[in-house]
Image (cartoon, rainbow, N blue to C red):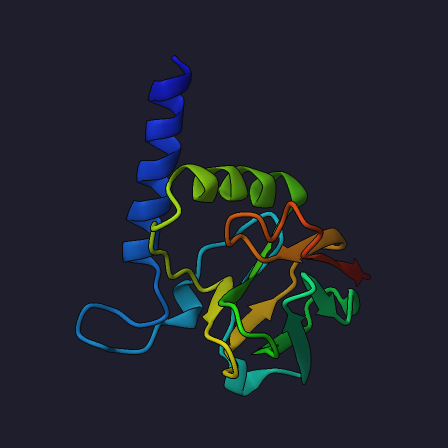
Length: 161
């Protein structure tokens, strides 16, 4: 039963990664008006962001800033910058979702994924995530490269009304 569940979860992640990347099969930009609603908001056009938040990622397995505050409804452009020598990523989600995804990444370390709530960033490079926080609460961002999340590479997003 657990294997069947894990296979289903993996298929969902892989399927959604193929279906919801930031660019479609023909390289066309995503239609943000049709972005899927999640527990922590939905993808938004980073060009229409209210503000840009630079998030530094380091090989000490930390994000700076470690906590971000936004208002409900606000559109944020995250600019994750990899200041280290290792590949890092910034993935937005609930703590439960991040833990589940991190476990899958440990089982399938070569798994490729490209969702609008994540940026996979090579050393010395930066990425971009546009996000609208539609619900108040506490949400998180983490690096789900195997071992990084477990080493404490996680930050908090506090969304206020």
